[in-house]
Amino acid sequence: MPRQYFHTPIEELERLVQEHRQSAAVLGPIWEELTFRTTDRARQLAREVSGLLDGTVPLPAKPPRPATPADQTNLF
Image (cartoon, rainbow, N blue to C red; front, side, top):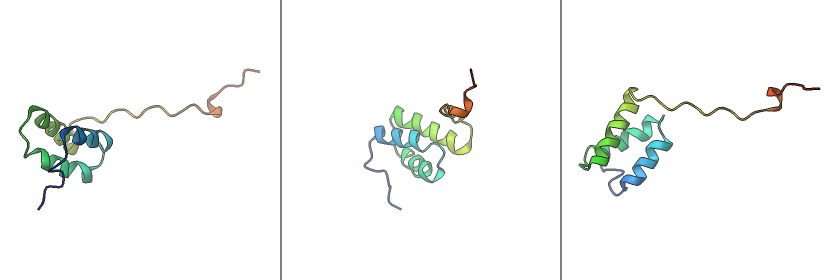
């Protein structure tokens, strides 16, 4: 099977991981590619992706939703 991310620089892989932290369909092939790479940066990213895939790395909290008029109290 050809390596989907063979020519993808580590910076791009890091960006993809950040954008798709909850998508095993994206993270799986990235993790596969990282198993072939030997730099410290690639190994660290592989550990992070592995943790995301197996659920040991917690996902960041979702940002609070924007305030809506219904959230405001009537001051008059």
